[in-house]
Length: 326
Image (cartoon, rainbow, N blue to C red; front, side, top):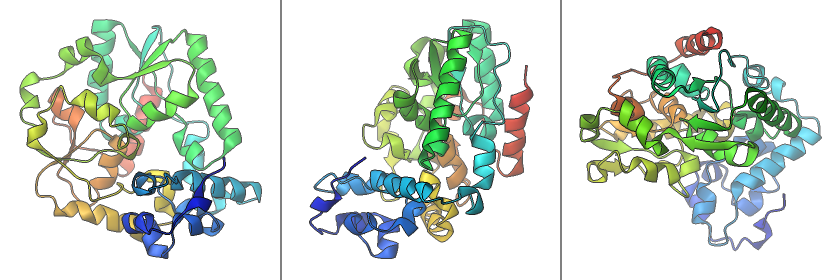
């Protein structure tokens, strides 16, 4: 896809507000000609948010990645082997006993980090609403690497599987799944926060008033804030301080593999918050907890599960356990 980086007026805003561009002292126009940095961009979109000409560094990065792949760049030899092993044909998928048109799709990371909360939601949806649960990956990590062939294969696999099972809509927990599926899935998707009857059956309404601290929005929701607006009915915004000065949790664009120190620097910024940090992205929770353990997924708080995030090898074991769950 073509970009409008040639129109760059060298105002310097993208460099000022992006730690990646600042590190290499480049702007978006210069970045467009640096394929060696293709996989160092976090795809967070901060550059586009501040650019007066709406130049999108995310697309520049994806174009550079496509060029490198075409030229024979081997991802599995450059730090992405484990990611490819897990995500190309998600090894922890589970479609056992699916028998409903409306299905719960918790994604990859929420079940890994919050297994007890996942079980609670899944059992409630099954027992009270007859809604089945499926475990799979949306395909976004592979798409961000710009493996076009594999991206299409994942999309086709998911669409064919849902059609085979008669699934007509997915209820999601993950912001990344929500935005990615809008362009890569044939069936309807919705966030759990949109389902008032389900939320009323799940949440402890007294806990909404106890949500007091800071909140960090995930990158895909920062532009439209669609999911954040869904959450507004469950929280008192006057009790919440939004974290705006940190551009990304460090997981975006699979860039942490190339930019270990920069990722650590981003995470260190969260140490400055004495108040609890609330999140509605499990991936953000997993990254931020590496520097500040005083974090909580807002859904866990609303449901009053009091679940602490699983980390390290335990999160992998959780994925594996859900893959064999019947």
